Length: 250
Ligand SMILES: *[C@@H]1O[C@H](CO)[C@@H](O)[C@H](O)[C@H]1NC(C)=O
Ligand SMILES: *[C@@H]1O[C@H](CO)[C@@H](O)[C@H](O)[C@H]1NC(C)=O
Ligand SMILES: *[C@@H]1O[C@H](CO)[C@@H](O)[C@H](O)[C@H]1NC(C)=O
Ligand SMILES: *[C@@H]1O[C@H](CO)[C@@H](O)[C@H](O)[C@H]1NC(C)=O
View 1 (cartoon, rainbow, N blue to C red):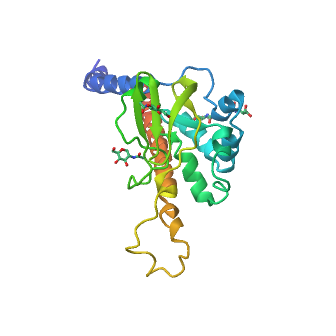
View 2: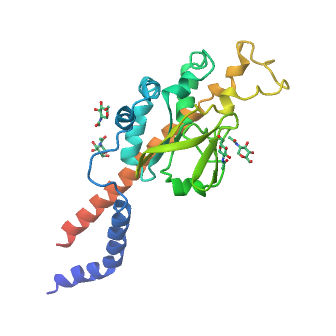
View 3: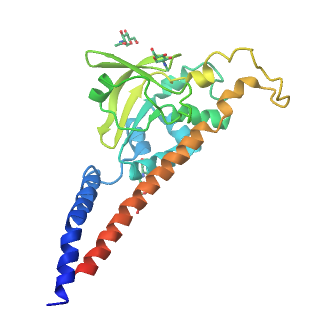
């Protein structure tokens, strides 16, 4: 009897805490995708056909792996604006080949939004919308969405096109076909004014690549990934905590 009262006391003291922990875990677990296997972007594109260039770029830049991991670990989901093979073919000759690897990564990440947007979401989203290519300073890597009726247009500032059919519209992955490649201002926009060309950096013989050569996108990619990891650790930490509490209590 004497030994049971401290336990009762501990239980009474801890129960609101335990309750809030379990409800938190429950709330975080709630939006988890249905148990039908992870969303497979390249699989979706492959099945739809006419996206071979995009698939090739997603694979060669390793972005498909990054997306796979993000879909598995983020509770925000993702949205991909998928340019068709025609869209890539209609680019001015050499456009892709003139980009260095870093710029190709940025171009592809510019078509990925770090959040799941349904068409309804896009009809009322506030501009500009952040993309995965957005560096820490925001930069010129946003997209603007406009809509009338149920038609949504997307603009990079250089290219405007409409969102066509949804190849995937179930959380966590939305994929919309676009018939133009969205060229980001940061890479394809007007060159920065000549106020400070390259007086202090003689080795930089190609100033046009300077703005795109920042480590912004990869940096944001890294923080996103580690953020998700931290979240996972937090979640499993809570589970361990609850588990050990239960063992302690019973
Ligand atoms: C995703 O789809 C691609 C292409 O269909 C396939 O090769 C790959 O094995 C799939 N991955 C998973 C995890 O299902
Ligand atoms: C998803 O993440 C969990 C744990 O974070 C891991 O065990 C699982 O293998 C991952 N699944 C895929 C398809 O990457
Ligand atoms: C979307 O773009 C098309 C042409 O591409 C244009 O006719 C239409 O007015 C635009 N709609 C909106 C809402 O911007
Ligand atoms: C988006 O719209 C804002 C405000 O109209 C404008 O300042 C910005 O340059 C636009 N960005 C793009 C990528 O079109």
